[in-house]
Length: 309
Image 1 (tube, rainbow, N blue to C red):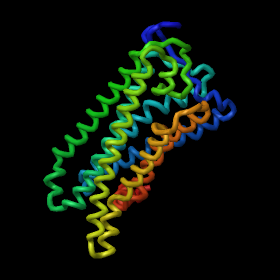
Image 2 (cartoon, rainbow, N blue to C red):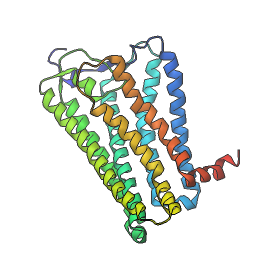
Image 3 (cartoon, helix red, strand yellow):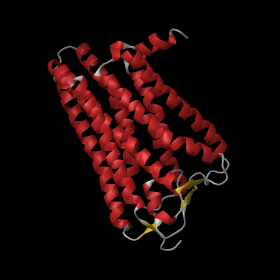
Image 4 (tube, rainbow, N blue to C red):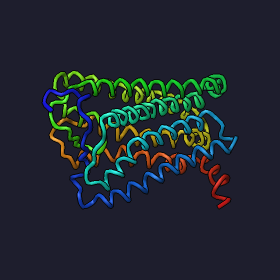
């Protein structure tokens, strides 16, 4: 395969879980339960918001969009990962690998953009409450969601195109459990350094840019909350941000750990376990956080579904 282009490769072999041969069945059962819970949790949030008209506000509409991005992201990676855990030869066709990369990066970037939009929504609600209905009109909210998905799609297309135009010059064995950028870069030769720096710059710029905007939003929010005279008023204002802020900390904590980790010799076991935290564990936590830390949503879930059960 020396000197062959990516287009000449018909399939890749995924060996991410080969380092845990005796734990694959346990991993399968654990990840299957977490995946089903992630799906059910996000679907429950979407159904509750759709059914309860009191939740038809920008914050909960953004939450529904966030749940959709979580579902699409996990659906792109986890079902194939579960199938590979039960397989002896974990292969993925070339086109499926490119599609998986695009459809994982698109909702991934969209997720960051939506978290930023939700931070802006909380900023407007607390710092400019009298202008909230004007600034966060239904049409304006729809545009923000549409721009988030458009931006995520463009970023996903740029990253996928940049990686899959490289030339492969080694084996077709990917030392990971899905088609991710760093393992594919290790199989390529040619102008790999420039592409790697470009892709890394795109990812880190998007991540840091969204993170800075969220921090700015919360800086103004905290300043506005501190000006509220009563402790009850401050607590009520902060409680509307608690679930979003918790998800932001979890999302960016794992993202920074992955993308900004120091370079050096990495083990297959370490890379796989680190990747699992972001692809399985973080989406699993998101609906739990929003359900438990958001009083209105929790009460709506009880009213709409749990009371009937």
